Image (cartoon, one colour):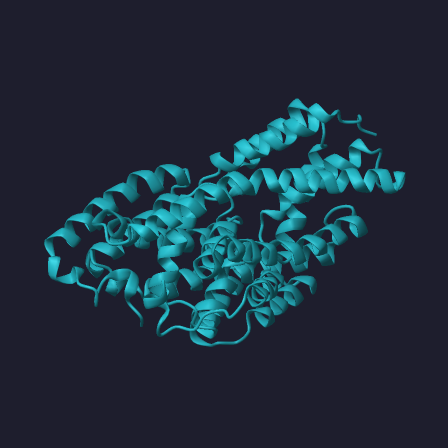
Length: 198
Length: 206
């Protein structure tokens, strides 16, 4: 299963993610369609199902969502090495895939952000820097609420989804009113869902 | 930064930074941002709400993974490049090992009905936590130099553009963002008295 990748291929993989790193304003996930085009359609390095399961797995596990990219790199390497059952060589290629894709997606944007932050700190007395921070504040707050909204409004059929929305609404209220640890809320949601109540 | 951090606490070492971010990341089901806000602003008091929103604005506008940007900015603020590496390392390393382990064990997301149901329930709660974090940060808006009654419409419109009309984020950030920055610029220019050290937005400590 899968074709071995040449050094040139590995290099291309890194460069492609480095390019996407600078394109992904609003988060790496916004460039997922382009990753799909490149990895699945153009290069055939990943199957459709392993592409979507990378995203699903990373979102269900704790940690930053950007780890879906590590899982894609892992899959590309494992496939190139002949599958998980091929043993150590495939595992090393999987790790190589993780390192190259994660460095690619993080390095360019991180360097840019670090430099921009330093610049903004040195120039923090400029009215324009203060105007940027003050002006963007309400926008990003609105966007944050819309992120949560989109997460729960992915389901749109009221007769079926009112229970999901109720859980979201209760979680919002509890989080606003109490300082209960968030893990308890997440666990409660997981138990309700696992019991088939949602 | 020292003048800013006077009244707030801050990490003592890069090791602490690494450990704190590992701890945060491993709690981050359905996104790490909510945990970062709660732990660093509400519990540890490393920064105020206003400072957090400012950092998040930059992290959001810069390309790349937002939470990675946020953590590297926070780490970099205390210990420069090494601090940025420690924070991002903490954010990534633990969850990466975990997620690779899961991938090896299951080869993908478990597709039985119980696991799917649990994920659905966890997702619904995670959505509520993100909404609540946004609303909490909204309570910092009265301190905005534009004034509360200009800031709130911007928050509501940006919510509607992305949440209801599903417009692409970069355009909303660029269009609505530049308008808001212009208004903020004019407000700051018209109120030179507000620019003295005491009330400068990045030095407010609540």
